[in-house]
Length: 531
View: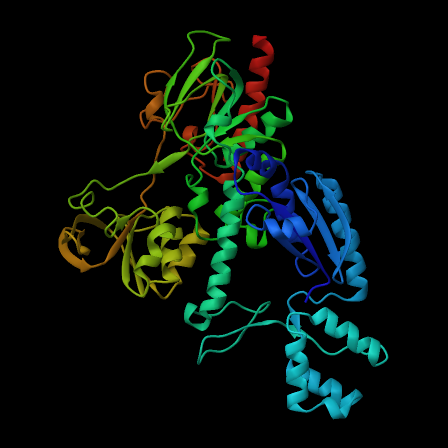
């Protein structure tokens, strides 16, 4: 029902496809999002649709084809982002002048009213139903034909509606989200899941296999360890300086990536992207546009060079135990969740005890859960869980929160969240095979047991620096120490620290991003001075 369709055939994720995807996929995705309501963007896997590709004359990949009113208007091959943008907007503007109907439909009542005005003989229920069936999914064509036949007058349109589940209210595509999953049909849910799988594959396509890195003996200029705001900012700055950085980080890791609540204080990011995952996805796409090489692995060991100008060696956690050599390292590994260390905690990890409300909260939908902690992380977890759980009990060992005022107020004003002040967890209780059933707590010297099928521990984080012990100076908590000159230099030559791995004071996404930029500038200066 739209004004035009852009078809983008592409192969499955082979190594060649990874090279293509890192250069053009972020542009394609961003353009599709920008032009929502003006155009329909479709990706076609030519390997799985060989007949289609042969009929369409596809000879190389990627190939872009642009259609308006069912006719091919333009085609080109190659990862040319500027041409993709220029042609898309040109045809989009043309379609807008004629009228676009993306996610729009003419309802039976609207068509009946239109015919009652222009052609009463066709205003009957049977006639209207026959015409709507004929033009199902072809709103633009229906409007064009009616306007041509009846002197330019157009029928009224409305947002296309998702087919509701039996007994539920219909949901408009551009209206508010349904209040519960039961209000959406299975077909609509399957379409949404398919869309999310496509988005996940696009995101994964930004990463390259370890095997594609430079061969044995090659030495990189910069390797960034960590893929959060600090690491990705460092990679972007290093790439702009021509240092061709490599980012080593698991796709699912990072504190910001796991946040399920809105991130409202990151400058310049608003709307649907203002979440932890949204910000990281934007940063990854930007890094990929500068040809940053991202590898979805973890670093498990490091051997630092003896002196200035030497090559450091990083050991990766892949099956081949790949060793990566580099002249500089930017450490941006952040911090991992801290545990309580009480009886039963280890026993019921994954069976009711968790540190990730965003990951596991939905498993305990419509049940009573507990959150332990008093900082921003605990507040965020409690708010996330309050969306799906019947009740959230927040256990805190003090008589006031150390979280920000805004987050604390949101928690205290939420009717589904109650707080147990001056309370500590003594023990987790349950049965093997059944999971957690209750928690023993102590409030001002008095012990009692509260029922709970899940408990989310949110008491802080420990810096991920174990593999650097005895090689780089750290403080008593394990945070990397940078030099007092205000730079990101550590005690080891050519090793720099950015983000929460060296910051136990601010721990904000924006400060991490800033320190990542500083680390890249420090690494560039080091490389220039080292020759």
